[in-house]
Length: 207
Image 1 (tube, one colour):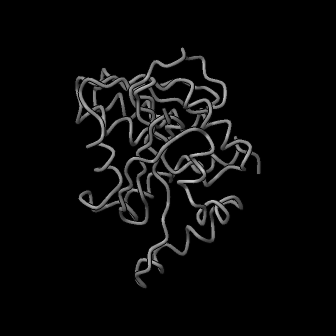
Image 2 (cartoon, rainbow, N blue to C red; image 1 turned 120 degrees about the horizontal axis):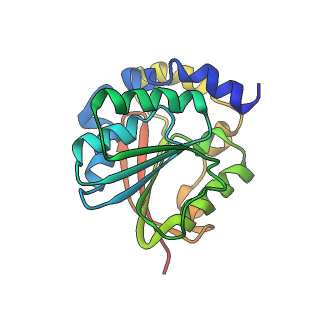
């Protein structure tokens, strides 16, 4: 299945991830990301999908500007309906290739990337990261949310479908030393927060 068909198929139930895995807000990556941005920020939600992060941030940070981009028209259709339903005026959504965006250099205070890198091969992941770095201000922050295996038996069982259904790159990405991995792109991990089934990494460009 090519990527267009995959995300078309996924678009209808992608938000179930939040219901199943991130339902406890206090221990979810959504809370952490919300606390890492401010009302003054111009934020890029890269590969925004159905717009969950973008909408949550826009509601909690009315003074922030959130730009969401995604290649999937079907995902963006759902995202746009959420923005319209919430009457949000600080979110803009665009259909773009995350490896070649029609955006200026160094124009964002924060770039968000949630549950994406494990889905794609090494070459594509690298291209996405490099493009994120291009549009991030010199003193900006790159905030990445990724899956993390739990050692708790109950959580292991609930996480089993993710282990089974994620595409092939997941198996190699989930065991990476992400500090070394991002260092290869000139990025420094300055904070790591462990959440339900996931972790949030806060990165900056290395001086």
